[in-house]
Length: 517
Image (cartoon, rainbow, N blue to C red; front, side):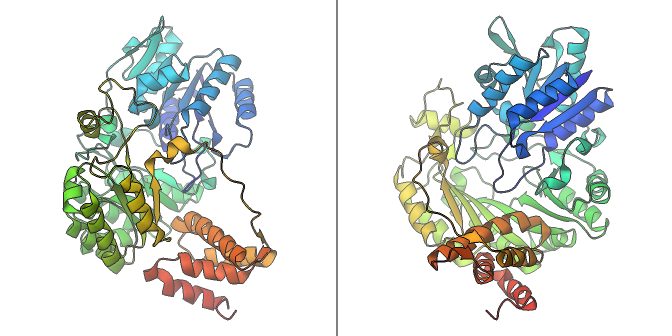
C-alpha cells in the first residue's frame, strides 16, 4: 500500500526537532511491506502547495498525520492543523488518520475539532500497521488498538496497547527526512513514567510501568546516525533520562564505548544526580543537562507531587557545574499551595545556587486526566464537564494575578533567564505594536559570528546562535548603529555565555583577536 506520512509541526523555537515518532512509524510500516513517503512541513515555505504535490506524485492509499503539540508557548495550533485536514479531504480520497502525542492527550476532542474520521492514540508503530491492514482488507477499524473512529457522527475508541519489547522495534526510517537540517535529533532509551507530578500527561500517554530499551541498542542506534548520516547532536526524549538510574548509567557506559563525535542532552530529575553520575554523563558525550526542578521550595514541591527536595536541586546544579556540564533549571510557578513565601524561597535559592540557565513558566496548563484537573475542579477553576481542548490554566488561589507581577519582577532582574506566562498562548494572535527597523548585519559581523559559534559545543550551537544574534542586534540598536559590527558580536557572546563557561568563551575570542577591539 502507498502511504504518505506528514509531520505537521512547524515550531522552530527553541530549536528545530526531527520527527522521531513519525520516523518510527515509517520504519514499522516499511517493515510491514508498505511503500512509504514522508513530508515534513517544518521547513516548508509553501505547505499547501507541497501537500498538493505530494498527493499528486505519490497517489497515497492512506495518509498519516503526526501532531506533536496542540499549542506552543504563544499560539493555539489546532486551527492550522484543521486547515491541513480540510485540504487533504479536498485533494485526496484516501483515509486520513491522525496521531502523535498532541493528538493522544485528548484524542476524541482533537479528532472532532479537526473534522477527521480516524485517529490513533498512544504508541503508533504497531497500531499504524494494524490500521493499514484494515484499510487494505476493507475491514472496519474496531479491531485496531488505540484507534478513534467516527461512525454516523459518533466517535468511538478502542483500548490502547503499549509495546512491550521496545528493543525489537524497527529503527526510525530517517532516510525519509532531511535529518542533517534539524538542530537536534531525538533518541529514546525508555517509555513510561513512574512519577506522580500533578500536572503531567506522561503516565497517561506512556503508562506508569517503565519499559526499557536495551542500552546496547540505544548506543548502536546513536552511533549509526553518526556514522551513516554524520549526525553528532542528540536529545534524549525520555520523560526523565535518569529514571531508573542504573539503566541510565548503563546507557552512558555504552555511549562512552562508542568513541568520540557524540554530543547529547537530556532532561533529568535532580534526585540521584550525584557527582559520579554527572561525570558519567559527561564522559558519554553529554554537554547540557535540563533539570526538572519545578520549584526550590519544599512546600511548593510537595504541592506539585515531586519526590525530591530543594537541597537535591542545589546538589544537582553543583554536580553538573563540577563535571563541566551546562545546566538549565525548569521551573513551574503557581502550583497548588504556592504562595508569596514559597515563591520568595525559590527566588532566593536561585540567587544562591546560580544555575547556568533558567526556564520558568508562570501558571500551569490543565490537561484532562492529570491530578491537577481534579484540584482545579475542587477550587472552582474549571467545571467538572469542561472541555479542556481550548487551553485553561491553573494558578494557586493564594496568588491569583499576583503571581505574574512577582515572577515578572524577579526575572526582569535576571534577563539572562527566561520566564513566560502559560496563558500567553491565548494572546499569541493579538496585534503587536510595530517594531522599529532592526540593525542589519555586515559581512564582517556575519563572519565573526560564524567563527565564534564554531567554538561552541555543537549541541547548543542553535540556541547559542539565536541568543547571540538577538543580543548583538539589541546592542547595535542601543549604540545607534545601522549595522551590527564584530564588537557587538563579541559583547553578545560574552553577555549570553553562562558564568562558569565565560572564561572559556573569552579564550576563544582572544584566539581570534576579538578582545582587542
